[in-house]
Image (cartoon, rainbow over all chains, first blue to last red):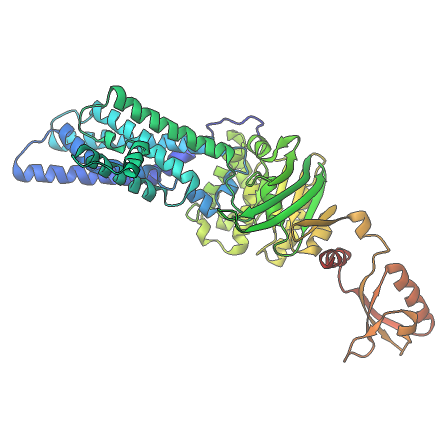
Length: 240
Length: 302
Protein backbone atom coordinates (compact mmCIF):
# COMPACT_ATOMS: atom_id res chain seq x y z
CA UNK A 1 0.00 0.00 0.00
CA UNK A 2 1.21 3.51 -0.80
CA UNK A 3 1.47 5.58 2.35
CA UNK A 4 0.49 8.75 0.51
CA UNK A 5 -1.71 7.66 -2.37
CA UNK A 6 -2.98 10.24 -4.87
CA UNK A 7 -6.08 12.11 -3.74
CA UNK A 8 -7.47 11.79 -7.26
CA UNK A 9 -6.89 8.04 -7.62
CA UNK A 10 -10.58 7.14 -7.52
CA UNK A 11 -11.69 9.99 -9.81
CA UNK A 12 -11.72 7.88 -13.02
CA UNK A 13 -14.04 5.35 -11.37
CA UNK A 14 -16.32 8.11 -10.10
CA UNK A 15 -16.39 9.62 -13.60
CA UNK A 16 -17.35 6.22 -14.98
CA UNK A 17 -20.21 5.97 -12.46
CA UNK A 18 -21.53 9.44 -13.32
CA UNK A 19 -21.18 8.71 -17.05
CA UNK A 20 -23.11 5.45 -16.71
CA UNK A 21 -25.78 7.00 -14.48
CA UNK A 22 -26.83 10.59 -15.16
CA UNK A 23 -24.49 10.83 -18.18
CA UNK A 24 -26.33 8.17 -20.19
CA UNK A 25 -29.69 9.77 -19.33
CA UNK A 26 -28.46 13.19 -20.42
CA UNK A 27 -27.07 11.81 -23.66
CA UNK A 28 -30.30 9.98 -24.45
CA UNK A 29 -32.34 13.12 -23.69
CA UNK A 30 -30.05 15.20 -25.94
CA UNK A 31 -30.36 12.71 -28.83
CA UNK A 32 -34.14 12.37 -28.47
CA UNK A 33 -34.60 16.15 -28.09
CA UNK A 34 -32.50 17.01 -31.12
CA UNK A 35 -34.17 14.36 -33.32
CA UNK A 36 -37.62 15.68 -32.32
CA UNK A 37 -36.62 19.27 -33.17
CA UNK A 38 -35.10 18.13 -36.47
CA UNK A 39 -38.23 16.16 -37.48
CA UNK A 40 -40.54 19.07 -36.58
CA UNK A 41 -38.30 21.50 -38.50
CA UNK A 42 -38.33 19.17 -41.51
CA UNK A 43 -42.13 18.87 -41.51
CA UNK A 44 -42.78 22.57 -41.08
CA UNK A 45 -39.96 23.60 -43.38
CA UNK A 46 -38.60 25.99 -40.75
CA UNK A 47 -34.98 26.44 -39.70
CA UNK A 48 -34.86 27.25 -35.98
CA UNK A 49 -31.73 28.64 -34.38
CA UNK A 50 -30.04 25.91 -32.30
CA UNK A 51 -29.17 28.44 -29.59
CA UNK A 52 -32.81 29.36 -29.20
CA UNK A 53 -33.94 25.70 -29.20
CA UNK A 54 -31.33 24.89 -26.57
CA UNK A 55 -32.36 27.74 -24.29
CA UNK A 56 -36.04 26.81 -24.56
CA UNK A 57 -35.32 23.15 -23.83
CA UNK A 58 -33.09 23.82 -20.83
CA UNK A 59 -35.52 26.37 -19.42
CA UNK A 60 -38.05 23.53 -19.22
CA UNK A 61 -35.75 20.84 -17.78
CA UNK A 62 -33.27 22.91 -15.78
CA UNK A 63 -34.20 21.84 -12.25
CA UNK A 64 -34.84 18.21 -13.27
CA UNK A 65 -31.38 18.07 -14.86
CA UNK A 66 -29.78 19.23 -11.61
CA UNK A 67 -31.81 16.79 -9.51
CA UNK A 68 -30.86 13.85 -11.73
CA UNK A 69 -27.19 14.86 -11.60
CA UNK A 70 -27.02 14.98 -7.82
CA UNK A 71 -29.99 13.06 -6.38
CA UNK A 72 -29.13 10.49 -3.70
CA UNK A 73 -25.44 11.32 -3.96
CA UNK A 74 -24.50 10.69 -0.32
CA UNK A 75 -27.70 9.22 0.99
CA UNK A 76 -27.83 6.18 -1.28
CA UNK A 77 -24.39 5.04 -0.09
CA UNK A 78 -25.40 5.56 3.54
CA UNK A 79 -28.79 3.86 3.26
CA UNK A 80 -27.39 0.89 1.32
CA UNK A 81 -24.44 0.56 3.68
CA UNK A 82 -21.88 0.93 0.83
CA UNK A 83 -20.09 3.64 2.80
CA UNK A 84 -18.62 1.00 5.11
CA UNK A 85 -16.56 -0.45 2.27
CA UNK A 86 -15.60 2.94 0.74
CA UNK A 87 -14.65 4.75 3.92
CA UNK A 88 -12.79 2.03 5.75
CA UNK A 89 -10.22 2.76 3.05
CA UNK A 90 -7.93 5.80 3.28
CA UNK A 91 -10.44 8.22 1.75
CA UNK A 92 -12.28 11.08 3.43
CA UNK A 93 -16.02 11.22 2.71
CA UNK A 94 -16.00 15.01 2.13
CA UNK A 95 -13.36 14.69 -0.57
CA UNK A 96 -15.00 11.66 -2.19
CA UNK A 97 -18.36 13.41 -2.50
CA UNK A 98 -16.87 16.77 -3.52
CA UNK A 99 -15.28 15.02 -6.51
CA UNK A 100 -18.60 13.35 -7.26
CA UNK A 101 -20.40 16.70 -7.07
CA UNK A 102 -17.92 18.39 -9.39
CA UNK A 103 -18.24 15.54 -11.90
CA UNK A 104 -22.04 15.94 -11.81
CA UNK A 105 -21.54 19.60 -12.72
CA UNK A 106 -19.20 18.73 -15.59
CA UNK A 107 -21.74 16.33 -17.06
CA UNK A 108 -24.50 18.94 -16.68
CA UNK A 109 -22.36 21.43 -18.62
CA UNK A 110 -21.43 18.84 -21.23
CA UNK A 111 -25.09 18.15 -22.00
CA UNK A 112 -25.89 21.45 -23.81
CA UNK A 113 -22.64 21.12 -25.73
CA UNK A 114 -23.62 17.66 -27.01
CA UNK A 115 -27.22 18.77 -27.57
CA UNK A 116 -26.09 21.92 -29.41
CA UNK A 117 -23.67 19.97 -31.57
CA UNK A 118 -26.39 17.48 -32.51
CA UNK A 119 -28.82 20.30 -33.31
CA UNK A 120 -26.22 22.11 -35.41
CA UNK A 121 -25.48 18.86 -37.24
CA UNK A 122 -29.12 17.99 -37.90
CA UNK A 123 -30.43 21.49 -38.63
CA UNK A 124 -27.36 22.53 -40.57
CA UNK A 125 -27.01 25.98 -39.08
CA UNK A 126 -25.73 27.71 -35.93
CA UNK A 127 -22.77 26.95 -33.68
CA UNK A 128 -24.63 24.95 -31.12
CA UNK A 129 -22.59 26.22 -28.15
CA UNK A 130 -24.20 28.96 -26.15
CA UNK A 131 -21.82 30.42 -23.56
CA UNK A 132 -24.55 32.40 -21.76
CA UNK A 133 -26.52 29.17 -21.38
CA UNK A 134 -23.47 27.40 -19.92
CA UNK A 135 -23.02 30.19 -17.36
CA UNK A 136 -26.70 30.00 -16.39
CA UNK A 137 -26.53 26.22 -16.05
CA UNK A 138 -23.37 26.49 -13.94
CA UNK A 139 -25.10 28.92 -11.57
CA UNK A 140 -28.14 26.69 -11.50
CA UNK A 141 -25.99 23.68 -10.63
CA UNK A 142 -24.24 25.64 -7.91
CA UNK A 143 -27.55 26.48 -6.29
CA UNK A 144 -29.72 23.39 -6.90
CA UNK A 145 -26.86 20.88 -6.94
CA UNK A 146 -25.50 22.21 -3.65
CA UNK A 147 -28.95 22.13 -2.09
CA UNK A 148 -29.38 18.46 -3.06
CA UNK A 149 -25.84 17.68 -1.85
CA UNK A 150 -26.53 19.31 1.52
CA UNK A 151 -29.89 17.59 2.01
CA UNK A 152 -28.36 14.29 0.87
CA UNK A 153 -25.85 14.40 3.74
CA UNK A 154 -28.73 14.55 6.22
CA UNK A 155 -31.83 13.04 4.76
CA UNK A 156 -33.35 10.56 2.34
CA UNK A 157 -35.35 11.74 -0.72
CA UNK A 158 -33.01 14.70 -1.09
CA UNK A 159 -34.08 15.38 -4.69
CA UNK A 160 -37.76 15.42 -3.75
CA UNK A 161 -37.17 17.75 -0.80
CA UNK A 162 -35.23 20.19 -3.00
CA UNK A 163 -37.85 19.94 -5.75
CA UNK A 164 -40.57 20.86 -3.23
CA UNK A 165 -38.46 23.70 -1.79
CA UNK A 166 -37.71 25.00 -5.27
CA UNK A 167 -41.37 24.92 -6.30
CA UNK A 168 -42.42 26.56 -3.01
CA UNK A 169 -39.83 29.33 -3.33
CA UNK A 170 -40.84 30.10 -6.91
CA UNK A 171 -44.51 30.18 -5.93
CA UNK A 172 -43.70 32.53 -3.05
CA UNK A 173 -41.69 34.70 -5.44
CA UNK A 174 -44.68 35.02 -7.77
CA UNK A 175 -46.91 35.88 -4.81
CA UNK A 176 -44.40 38.45 -3.57
CA UNK A 177 -44.30 40.04 -7.03
CA UNK A 178 -48.08 40.30 -7.17
CA UNK A 179 -50.12 42.87 -5.32
CA UNK A 180 -50.86 40.35 -2.53
CA UNK A 181 -49.16 40.94 0.80
CA UNK A 182 -47.49 37.78 2.15
CA UNK A 183 -48.20 36.75 5.77
CA UNK A 184 -45.18 37.19 8.05
CA UNK A 185 -44.32 33.46 8.13
CA UNK A 186 -44.41 33.13 4.35
CA UNK A 187 -42.44 36.34 3.99
CA UNK A 188 -39.81 34.86 6.35
CA UNK A 189 -39.76 31.58 4.42
CA UNK A 190 -39.34 33.49 1.15
CA UNK A 191 -36.40 35.40 2.60
CA UNK A 192 -34.53 32.36 3.92
CA UNK A 193 -35.15 29.87 1.10
CA UNK A 194 -32.47 29.59 -1.61
CA UNK A 195 -33.21 32.04 -4.46
CA UNK A 196 -34.35 29.40 -6.96
CA UNK A 197 -36.38 31.98 -8.90
CA UNK A 198 -33.14 33.69 -9.97
CA UNK A 199 -31.81 30.71 -11.92
CA UNK A 200 -34.16 30.81 -14.89
CA UNK A 201 -32.62 29.76 -18.21
CA UNK A 202 -32.89 31.87 -21.34
CA UNK A 203 -33.26 35.27 -19.65
CA UNK A 204 -30.51 37.82 -19.16
CA UNK A 205 -27.37 36.54 -17.44
CA UNK A 206 -27.31 37.35 -13.74
CA UNK A 207 -25.15 40.20 -12.55
CA UNK A 208 -24.69 42.37 -9.46
CA UNK A 209 -26.75 41.56 -6.35
CA UNK A 210 -28.75 38.61 -7.77
CA UNK A 211 -25.55 37.02 -9.06
CA UNK A 212 -23.88 37.28 -5.65
CA UNK A 213 -27.07 36.05 -3.99
CA UNK A 214 -26.99 32.86 -6.05
CA UNK A 215 -23.21 32.38 -5.80
CA UNK A 216 -23.18 33.10 -2.05
CA UNK A 217 -26.11 30.83 -1.31
CA UNK A 218 -24.83 28.01 -3.52
CA UNK A 219 -21.29 28.17 -2.18
CA UNK A 220 -22.60 28.39 1.39
CA UNK A 221 -24.67 25.22 0.96
CA UNK A 222 -21.75 23.43 -0.69
CA UNK A 223 -19.41 24.35 2.16
CA UNK A 224 -22.05 23.35 4.72
CA UNK A 225 -22.46 19.95 3.04
CA UNK A 226 -18.69 19.41 3.26
CA UNK A 227 -18.65 20.53 6.91
CA UNK A 228 -21.43 18.02 7.69
CA UNK A 229 -19.37 15.27 6.06
CA UNK A 230 -16.27 16.36 7.96
CA UNK A 231 -17.90 16.47 11.37
CA UNK A 232 -20.83 14.08 11.36
CA UNK A 233 -20.15 10.33 11.30
CA UNK A 234 -21.89 8.48 8.47
CA UNK A 235 -23.20 5.66 10.66
CA UNK A 236 -26.37 5.87 12.66
CA UNK A 237 -26.25 2.57 14.51
CA UNK A 238 -24.01 -0.41 15.08
CA UNK A 239 -24.93 -2.10 11.81
CA UNK A 240 -26.60 0.86 10.06
CA UNK B 1 -2.21 0.93 19.15
CA UNK B 2 -5.99 1.00 19.67
CA UNK B 3 -7.27 2.44 22.90
CA UNK B 4 -10.82 2.50 24.17
CA UNK B 5 -10.79 4.82 27.20
CA UNK B 6 -14.05 4.64 29.16
CA UNK B 7 -15.79 4.73 25.79
CA UNK B 8 -19.56 4.59 25.66
CA UNK B 9 -22.27 4.96 23.07
CA UNK B 10 -25.89 5.81 23.71
CA UNK B 11 -28.42 5.87 20.89
CA UNK B 12 -31.30 8.24 21.35
CA UNK B 13 -34.33 9.18 19.34
CA UNK B 14 -34.51 12.59 17.66
CA UNK B 15 -36.04 14.30 20.67
CA UNK B 16 -34.03 12.22 23.11
CA UNK B 17 -37.08 10.62 24.70
CA UNK B 18 -35.84 7.08 24.28
CA UNK B 19 -32.25 6.15 24.98
CA UNK B 20 -30.45 2.87 24.52
CA UNK B 21 -27.01 2.36 25.98
CA UNK B 22 -25.24 0.19 23.40
CA UNK B 23 -21.79 0.37 24.95
CA UNK B 24 -20.82 1.57 28.39
CA UNK B 25 -17.52 2.47 30.03
CA UNK B 26 -15.40 0.31 27.75
CA UNK B 27 -11.69 0.44 28.49
CA UNK B 28 -9.50 -1.83 26.43
CA UNK B 29 -6.06 -1.61 24.85
CA UNK B 30 -5.25 -3.61 21.75
CA UNK B 31 -1.67 -4.03 20.62
CA UNK B 32 0.10 -4.60 17.33
CA UNK B 33 0.93 -8.24 16.70
CA UNK B 34 -2.23 -9.48 18.37
CA UNK B 35 -5.24 -11.31 17.04
CA UNK B 36 -8.08 -10.24 19.30
CA UNK B 37 -11.54 -11.75 19.37
CA UNK B 38 -14.74 -9.95 20.32
CA UNK B 39 -17.53 -12.20 21.54
CA UNK B 40 -20.92 -11.52 23.00
CA UNK B 41 -24.56 -12.43 22.63
CA UNK B 42 -26.82 -10.55 20.20
CA UNK B 43 -27.15 -6.91 21.18
CA UNK B 44 -24.01 -7.04 23.34
CA UNK B 45 -22.46 -4.07 21.52
CA UNK B 46 -20.00 -5.80 19.18
CA UNK B 47 -21.13 -3.94 16.06
CA UNK B 48 -21.21 -0.63 17.91
CA UNK B 49 -17.66 -1.25 19.11
CA UNK B 50 -16.55 -1.84 15.51
CA UNK B 51 -18.38 1.27 14.27
CA UNK B 52 -16.60 3.33 16.93
CA UNK B 53 -13.30 1.78 15.94
CA UNK B 54 -13.83 2.74 12.29
CA UNK B 55 -15.09 6.22 13.15
CA UNK B 56 -18.51 5.52 11.64
CA UNK B 57 -19.91 6.60 15.02
CA UNK B 58 -18.59 9.04 17.57
CA UNK B 59 -18.50 7.86 21.19
CA UNK B 60 -21.07 9.51 23.46
CA UNK B 61 -18.54 9.29 26.29
CA UNK B 62 -14.82 8.58 26.55
CA UNK B 63 -12.40 8.22 23.66
CA UNK B 64 -11.41 5.81 20.94
CA UNK B 65 -7.94 6.36 19.51
CA UNK B 66 -5.70 4.53 17.09
CA UNK B 67 -2.01 5.37 17.33
CA UNK B 68 -2.95 8.55 19.17
CA UNK B 69 -5.31 9.77 16.43
CA UNK B 70 -9.07 9.85 16.55
CA UNK B 71 -10.44 6.68 14.98
CA UNK B 72 -11.91 8.53 11.97
CA UNK B 73 -8.69 10.46 11.35
CA UNK B 74 -6.63 7.26 11.45
CA UNK B 75 -8.95 5.45 9.04
CA UNK B 76 -9.02 8.37 6.59
CA UNK B 77 -5.24 8.59 6.47
CA UNK B 78 -4.11 4.97 6.90
CA UNK B 79 -7.15 2.82 6.17
CA UNK B 80 -8.36 -0.36 7.81
CA UNK B 81 -9.04 -3.74 6.23
CA UNK B 82 -12.68 -4.21 7.08
CA UNK B 83 -15.10 -7.03 6.39
CA UNK B 84 -18.62 -5.99 7.30
CA UNK B 85 -21.04 -8.37 8.99
CA UNK B 86 -23.51 -7.88 6.14
CA UNK B 87 -21.52 -7.46 2.95
CA UNK B 88 -23.15 -4.47 1.23
CA UNK B 89 -21.71 -3.73 -2.18
CA UNK B 90 -23.40 -2.30 -5.29
CA UNK B 91 -25.35 -5.23 -6.75
CA UNK B 92 -24.56 -4.52 -10.40
CA UNK B 93 -20.82 -4.22 -10.06
CA UNK B 94 -18.80 -7.12 -11.40
CA UNK B 95 -16.42 -8.90 -9.05
CA UNK B 96 -13.18 -8.00 -10.87
CA UNK B 97 -14.16 -4.34 -11.30
CA UNK B 98 -15.24 -4.16 -7.69
CA UNK B 99 -11.92 -5.51 -6.50
CA UNK B 100 -10.01 -3.12 -8.78
CA UNK B 101 -11.96 -0.20 -7.36
CA UNK B 102 -11.35 -1.32 -3.80
CA UNK B 103 -7.64 -1.78 -4.52
CA UNK B 104 -7.48 1.77 -5.90
CA UNK B 105 -9.40 3.14 -2.91
CA UNK B 106 -7.10 1.17 -0.60
CA UNK B 107 -4.15 3.07 -2.05
CA UNK B 108 -2.56 0.14 -3.87
CA UNK B 109 -0.08 1.64 -6.40
CA UNK B 110 -1.53 1.63 -9.94
CA UNK B 111 1.14 -0.76 -11.21
CA UNK B 112 0.23 -3.34 -8.57
CA UNK B 113 -3.56 -3.17 -8.74
CA UNK B 114 -4.02 -5.92 -11.31
CA UNK B 115 -1.60 -8.35 -9.66
CA UNK B 116 -3.08 -7.69 -6.21
CA UNK B 117 -6.61 -8.30 -7.54
CA UNK B 118 -5.55 -11.51 -9.29
CA UNK B 119 -3.86 -12.73 -6.10
CA UNK B 120 -7.02 -12.02 -4.07
CA UNK B 121 -9.17 -13.83 -6.64
CA UNK B 122 -6.87 -16.85 -6.50
CA UNK B 123 -6.53 -16.80 -2.70
CA UNK B 124 -10.25 -16.73 -2.11
CA UNK B 125 -11.26 -19.10 -4.90
CA UNK B 126 -13.21 -16.51 -6.89
CA UNK B 127 -11.90 -17.44 -10.33
CA UNK B 128 -15.20 -18.81 -11.64
CA UNK B 129 -17.12 -15.84 -10.22
CA UNK B 130 -14.86 -13.03 -11.44
CA UNK B 131 -17.22 -11.86 -14.21
CA UNK B 132 -20.40 -12.18 -12.15
CA UNK B 133 -22.32 -9.24 -10.78
CA UNK B 134 -22.44 -8.93 -7.00
CA UNK B 135 -26.17 -9.69 -7.03
CA UNK B 136 -25.52 -13.05 -8.73
CA UNK B 137 -23.28 -14.31 -5.92
CA UNK B 138 -24.39 -16.77 -3.27
CA UNK B 139 -24.05 -15.73 0.36
CA UNK B 140 -20.81 -17.63 0.83
CA UNK B 141 -19.27 -16.25 -2.37
CA UNK B 142 -20.33 -12.74 -1.44
CA UNK B 143 -18.64 -13.23 1.91
CA UNK B 144 -15.45 -14.24 0.13
CA UNK B 145 -15.63 -11.15 -2.09
CA UNK B 146 -16.13 -9.08 1.06
CA UNK B 147 -13.06 -10.68 2.58
CA UNK B 148 -11.04 -10.17 -0.62
CA UNK B 149 -11.83 -6.44 -0.76
CA UNK B 150 -10.90 -6.06 2.91
CA UNK B 151 -7.51 -7.65 2.41
CA UNK B 152 -6.43 -5.91 -0.81
CA UNK B 153 -4.70 -3.10 1.04
CA UNK B 154 -1.75 -3.99 3.20
CA UNK B 155 -3.29 -2.44 6.30
CA UNK B 156 -1.90 -2.42 9.84
CA UNK B 157 -5.37 -2.91 11.29
CA UNK B 158 -7.76 -5.57 10.02
CA UNK B 159 -11.30 -5.84 11.37
CA UNK B 160 -13.38 -8.88 10.47
CA UNK B 161 -17.01 -8.86 11.59
CA UNK B 162 -18.50 -12.37 11.54
CA UNK B 163 -16.00 -13.46 8.89
CA UNK B 164 -17.23 -17.04 8.46
CA UNK B 165 -20.88 -16.08 8.24
CA UNK B 166 -22.29 -18.01 5.26
CA UNK B 167 -19.06 -19.88 4.50
CA UNK B 168 -19.21 -23.63 3.98
CA UNK B 169 -17.03 -25.90 6.18
CA UNK B 170 -14.27 -26.07 3.54
CA UNK B 171 -13.99 -22.29 3.34
CA UNK B 172 -14.37 -21.90 7.09
CA UNK B 173 -11.26 -24.05 7.45
CA UNK B 174 -9.45 -22.12 4.69
CA UNK B 175 -10.38 -18.87 6.39
CA UNK B 176 -8.27 -19.94 9.35
CA UNK B 177 -5.27 -20.17 7.02
CA UNK B 178 -6.08 -16.70 5.69
CA UNK B 179 -6.06 -15.29 9.23
CA UNK B 180 -2.91 -17.20 10.08
CA UNK B 181 -1.22 -15.48 7.14
CA UNK B 182 -2.51 -12.10 8.28
CA UNK B 183 -0.74 -12.41 11.59
CA UNK B 184 2.45 -10.36 11.76
CA UNK B 185 4.21 -8.27 14.42
CA UNK B 186 3.12 -4.90 13.02
CA UNK B 187 -0.51 -5.74 12.47
CA UNK B 188 -3.55 -5.98 14.69
CA UNK B 189 -6.36 -8.30 13.66
CA UNK B 190 -9.73 -7.95 15.34
CA UNK B 191 -12.36 -10.64 14.81
CA UNK B 192 -15.92 -10.30 16.04
CA UNK B 193 -17.74 -13.59 15.98
CA UNK B 194 -20.45 -15.68 17.58
CA UNK B 195 -18.37 -18.72 16.80
CA UNK B 196 -16.42 -19.30 20.01
CA UNK B 197 -14.61 -22.32 18.61
CA UNK B 198 -13.27 -20.15 15.82
CA UNK B 199 -12.18 -17.42 18.23
CA UNK B 200 -10.53 -19.94 20.50
CA UNK B 201 -8.48 -21.27 17.60
CA UNK B 202 -7.52 -17.90 16.14
CA UNK B 203 -7.37 -15.25 18.84
CA UNK B 204 -4.70 -14.50 21.43
CA UNK B 205 -7.25 -12.71 23.58
CA UNK B 206 -11.02 -12.64 23.50
CA UNK B 207 -12.98 -9.71 24.90
CA UNK B 208 -16.43 -10.77 26.03
CA UNK B 209 -19.17 -8.16 25.91
CA UNK B 210 -22.57 -8.43 27.51
CA UNK B 211 -25.28 -5.79 27.47
CA UNK B 212 -22.86 -3.12 26.35
CA UNK B 213 -20.24 -3.81 29.00
CA UNK B 214 -16.89 -5.53 28.77
CA UNK B 215 -17.31 -8.35 31.23
CA UNK B 216 -13.97 -10.08 30.83
CA UNK B 217 -10.95 -10.51 28.61
CA UNK B 218 -9.84 -14.10 28.25
CA UNK B 219 -6.31 -14.62 27.03
CA UNK B 220 -4.91 -17.79 25.56
CA UNK B 221 -2.75 -18.44 28.63
CA UNK B 222 -5.74 -18.52 30.91
CA UNK B 223 -8.08 -20.37 28.62
CA UNK B 224 -5.59 -23.14 28.07
CA UNK B 225 -4.95 -23.28 31.82
CA UNK B 226 -5.80 -26.16 34.07
CA UNK B 227 -8.00 -24.73 36.73
CA UNK B 228 -11.05 -23.74 34.71
CA UNK B 229 -14.00 -25.97 35.61
CA UNK B 230 -15.88 -27.05 32.49
CA UNK B 231 -18.50 -29.65 31.56
CA UNK B 232 -17.33 -33.12 30.48
CA UNK B 233 -19.14 -36.09 29.04
CA UNK B 234 -17.84 -39.51 30.12
CA UNK B 235 -18.72 -42.99 28.96
CA UNK B 236 -17.45 -45.69 31.31
CA UNK B 237 -18.00 -49.44 31.32
CA UNK B 238 -17.73 -51.84 34.23
CA UNK B 239 -20.31 -50.23 36.55
CA UNK B 240 -17.84 -48.03 38.44
CA UNK B 241 -18.95 -45.86 41.35
CA UNK B 242 -18.50 -42.62 39.46
CA UNK B 243 -20.59 -40.43 41.77
CA UNK B 244 -18.44 -41.07 44.81
CA UNK B 245 -15.14 -40.50 43.01
CA UNK B 246 -16.17 -37.51 40.93
CA UNK B 247 -18.33 -35.19 43.06
CA UNK B 248 -21.18 -33.57 41.13
CA UNK B 249 -21.18 -36.17 38.35
CA UNK B 250 -24.68 -37.09 37.20
CA UNK B 251 -25.76 -40.00 35.00
CA UNK B 252 -27.27 -39.07 31.62
CA UNK B 253 -30.79 -40.42 31.55
CA UNK B 254 -31.48 -43.24 29.10
CA UNK B 255 -27.80 -43.79 28.28
CA UNK B 256 -26.22 -46.48 30.39
CA UNK B 257 -22.69 -45.72 31.50
CA UNK B 258 -22.85 -42.07 30.32
CA UNK B 259 -22.10 -39.36 32.85
CA UNK B 260 -21.92 -35.60 32.87
CA UNK B 261 -19.54 -33.81 35.24
CA UNK B 262 -18.26 -30.31 35.94
CA UNK B 263 -14.58 -30.50 36.83
CA UNK B 264 -11.18 -29.00 36.26
CA UNK B 265 -8.74 -31.03 34.21
CA UNK B 266 -6.73 -31.83 37.37
CA UNK B 267 -9.76 -33.09 39.33
CA UNK B 268 -11.00 -35.06 36.36
CA UNK B 269 -7.60 -36.73 35.84
CA UNK B 270 -7.43 -37.71 39.51
CA UNK B 271 -10.95 -39.12 39.51
CA UNK B 272 -10.38 -41.02 36.28
CA UNK B 273 -7.21 -42.50 37.74
CA UNK B 274 -9.13 -43.87 40.70
CA UNK B 275 -11.93 -45.17 38.50
CA UNK B 276 -9.54 -46.99 36.15
CA UNK B 277 -7.68 -48.49 39.11
CA UNK B 278 -11.04 -49.71 40.40
CA UNK B 279 -11.57 -51.60 37.13
CA UNK B 280 -13.60 -49.16 35.06
CA UNK B 281 -13.04 -49.01 31.31
CA UNK B 282 -12.99 -45.54 29.82
CA UNK B 283 -14.80 -45.49 26.47
CA UNK B 284 -15.02 -41.73 25.95
CA UNK B 285 -14.15 -38.50 27.73
CA UNK B 286 -14.86 -35.25 25.88
CA UNK B 287 -15.38 -31.66 26.96
CA UNK B 288 -18.99 -30.65 26.37
CA UNK B 289 -17.95 -27.07 25.83
CA UNK B 290 -14.68 -25.33 25.15
CA UNK B 291 -12.95 -23.39 27.90
CA UNK B 292 -13.77 -20.16 26.11
CA UNK B 293 -17.40 -21.25 25.93
CA UNK B 294 -17.35 -21.85 29.68
CA UNK B 295 -15.87 -18.41 30.29
CA UNK B 296 -18.42 -16.94 27.92
CA UNK B 297 -21.31 -18.66 29.70
CA UNK B 298 -20.09 -17.45 33.06
CA UNK B 299 -19.54 -13.91 31.78
CA UNK B 300 -22.99 -13.70 30.26
CA UNK B 301 -24.62 -15.20 33.37
CA UNK B 302 -22.90 -12.69 35.65
